[in-house]
Length: 299
Image 1 (cartoon, rainbow, N blue to C red):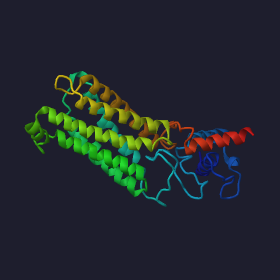
Image 2 (image 1 turned 90 degrees about the horizontal axis):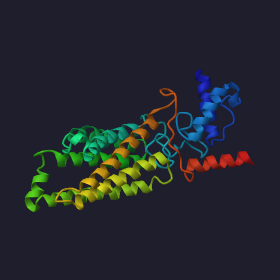
Image 3 (image 1 turned 90 degrees about the vertical axis):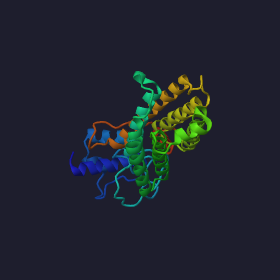
Image 4 (image 1 turned 135 degrees about the horizontal axis):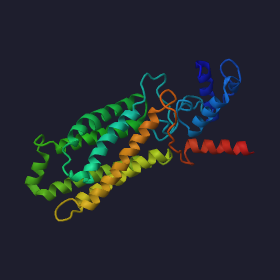
């Protein structure tokens, strides 16, 4: 595809996804320079509401990015004008996914591994520092939700690593010295339940986004809830194994969903042969626009 054809396809995708532009900047009808295959590809991209052919919707008078069009944002928002930053969301999602993946396997007792100390390195380096940086970059591009979520979970992993660091801050030994092992389990349960509450707040903000985005936070919310219950409702003085394993299972689902959403933000026509579907809710902005276009077509 030539450069001119790519530009025409992008503008055509914008028009099909809710824009009002019938012609290109030279006054030529958009489909004149497009093959049937190129036009079909533009329509497919616009139908999903994201990807390089439909990321930008100019129908509202300015450039606004749709709910999770590869961006870590549950609603439409206006980005920084002429931003020079790449999309930081896939980096933050990937950092969260890998660290959660490893810890969840340990929580499930995979291959008999029970001690989570190996997660300390990931918690500080990847899930913590890298995700925190991604959250700061989200703030730079004007994405409040992404900045809040990624920075907070980056802080979660750093705090988790601090708790697990042997001898570092002597958190575990100090709590156990004052109140015994049960005191530490209760304290850690409070820690997890706090993150369950925070994740619930973020989950509410994804109800008008996409199925993939909502499901990520829903499974993560269940993971925090079950792990918190597992530490507070102990069995034989230890964290409840079945509940902890259930929390690990939902954590594993959250990790794969985070990778899936990250891929949706990375894959475009320059590096992939297909677009990753994220399934907009019917009541989302993109879903309502699609339904309105369908109604106009059927009239």
